[in-house]
Length: 170
Image (cartoon, rainbow, N blue to C red; front, side, top):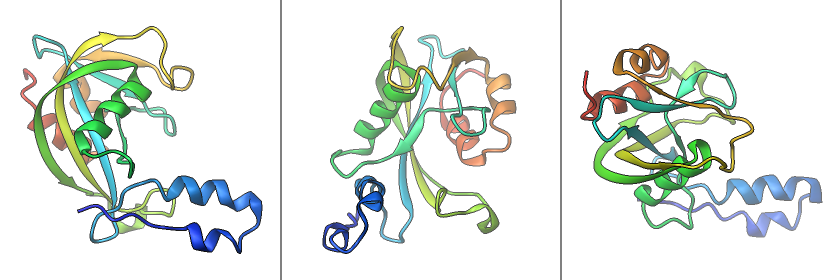
């Protein structure tokens, strides 16, 4: 279930400098328990021997493409493919739904910028890597083996769980 937060009535009482932030936040989907809905992909090579990882914009480590499921997107699959394009510059085909993965972070790591989330991942094959993409100036991408990906995702249990649910060759 998706719940849309409607901030429009409260915008009228705010200074103009605050309106763009709240307008942006209001487009992100939230679940029935108030958790942020996140959609992502496990992008595999056609032979399933490698996974494409992207550099995290914040911490610089390597992660899987993922991001907020926006309220104008009908499905998590649509959101996941958009995130794959924006963050990794890839055009992909969804092979299967890897299911919902709960946020495994301890409550001490949750903040207003990183609230509790629920992750929906999809296994995809990469059809094409574009030379230019929306976040190319802040993210690199690289193909890695299962062992390399698992090591890189050790501190991100929800992403490691998505990788482990995929049919990538170990």
